[in-house]
Structure formats: structure tokens, C-alpha cells
Length: 389
Image 1: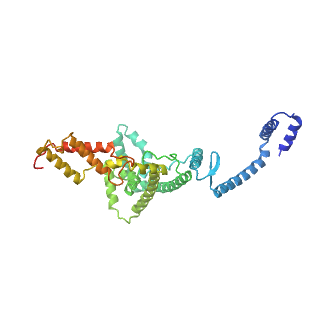
Image 2: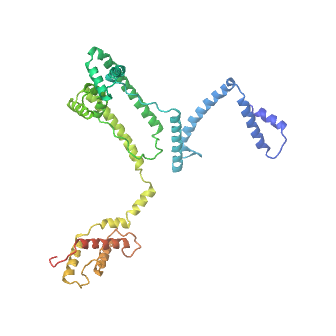
Image 3: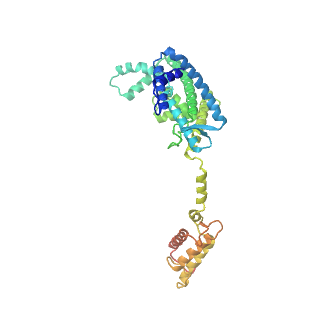
């Protein structure tokens, strides 16, 4: 609104010089900034409202335009979605925005598990029992507290049990709400906690239904059986769980909770597996296909002697005892040893589809060394040759 007025003032007071247009624009910007900074909040209000209205409409229109033409926003503006570099930059921008939003509004803490009836009674009476027994060790003091709690009347114990039951139901509802909220935040953030790289370890395993029940009822059973050691208490609780029928409502509830945790674990494990072993690109697939025809692939096929090769080895070794001077008599390190290794390598090289390089006219040195060493090891395991062979 003030640009024409300021432009007229500057034109009247400024002499024409080189670069006058740039200097005029810079002067106007500085004056506008100073004038806007001097405005009162009430004077700024209509401009702020107009900016909020027009910017929101602009963002919606810009997104629709980008979606229509298949564009994605990166550091240099909008580019086609098919550009891998642009897609990667857009993903980084989205992750940075999600991280900034998460930093501004940290997630709420998980609801704290409420006290059991015994622990609520213990918190109220432990000080008096400790003062009455100042020399009692901690272990014996806990046993005494357990015994006192079991000895009180049902009417005195009932308020603690009712309060604990109500607190537990409220805690379950809060946990369900917190889990749903965290799942929503994770979905909005796109699971960007690791910036696209797989964590060093898979997600922790989900708890089974008996473990969930034992974890929730441990305090009550500990108060009921204070004389049992932790391992004996755990065995007793699991035996009780096993004795419950399948249609028991408590057992069905914990099985349903465990099934939900199992589904969540499967989803997280699948995401971790995809990040840990991403699908190879076209260059890597071509490289893998080329490497499959390398000498290493041929050596893997030559890991064992064929029946024909084994019978030839036995015949040449037996020839050593009958005619040691024969040129085909096989011994470790002699000429027959080298000749046989070359024959085996040539037979393998001539097989269809196994040539490591079509330009080669003879087997590679790797295959020759492989068969020479393999025959030597075979002879070491059979040092003696008799006519019976």
C-alpha cells in the first residue's frame, strides 16, 4: 500500500546514478520494514489476518498443483517425482519437519502403573512398623509387613482392594489411549527415528499372555505368599495360569492383549527387515548377475570329485604300486599329479555355461590351483596304494 508513495518520495529526492534502480529498491525495502516494525499490534492485525488467509489458500493450491503435475518439493523447488535425487531430498525435508515438530511437542510419558492393594497399605504403615522394630533387617521387615497385611480383617483390607481395582482400570484405559496416540504420532512421522537406516538390533519380542498376567498379578501373589522365593512364586503363578480353562474371561483378555502386541511386533519387525535388507537397485542386480558367472561360481561347482574322476584317481594311485616308473603313476607332486589337475580343469571349463570369460582359450589359474590342491589333499588322506586297490 505504501510502495507508490515511497517510490514518489525517493524519485523526487534521489539524483540519477549508476545502479539507481537497485539502490531505489533496497531503500524502499528498508523503509517498509521500518514502517511495519513501528506499527501497533492493532494496526498489524488486519495484515496478519489477510496473510494467514491467503497463505493457507496458497498452500492448498500449491499442493494440488504439484499433485496434478506429478511434482515433489525439494531444496531447489518443485521437480518431477521420478528424479531419485529429488525424491531423496523431499524425504529428508519431510523427516526434518517431523523431527522439528517432535522436538517442539515431546511425547507424553507412558502412564505409570498404580500401586497394588498391599503396596498402598504398606506405604501407609511401613514407617510405624519400622519404628516399632528398629533392629529388624530389611528382609525380615518385609516378611513381617506381609504377615501383618494377611492378618488384618477383610473389612479393613476391602478399601485398599477397591481403590487398587479402580486405579488399575483407569490405568488400563490410560495405557490404551497412550498407545493409540503414540501409534498416530509414529504414523504421522513416518517412522523416521533412524533416518532410513536399519537399527543394529531387531525390535524386542512381544510378551506372551502368561507373562502379561504374571507381571500384573505379581504384587498380589507376593503379598499372598510372602514365604516363597521369586522363582518358586513364578512357578506357582504359571501353574495356576495353566489350570485356568480357556474360556476364562481373565485368560481370554490377556490372550487378546498378547495378540495385539504380536501384530504390532510383526509390523515393526517387517519394517526393520525392509530397512536392513533393502531391495537391490538395477546396478546391483546387474553386478550380482555378472558375478554369478565368475570363477568363484565355477569353483563352487567343483567342490567334490565326480564318480568318474574318483575312479580315475583310484586307478592312477593303484598304478603307483605296480609300475612306479609309469608316467601315469599318481604321486603327490609328480608330473601325473599336474597332468590330472589340468584334465579335470579342462573338463570343467568345457562344460556349457561355465566359462568365466569367453575370450579365454584355457582354464583359469584359479581352477588349476583348485584341482591341484584338491588332488594333493586326496592323496594325503590315502598315503598307501596296494595291488588290491
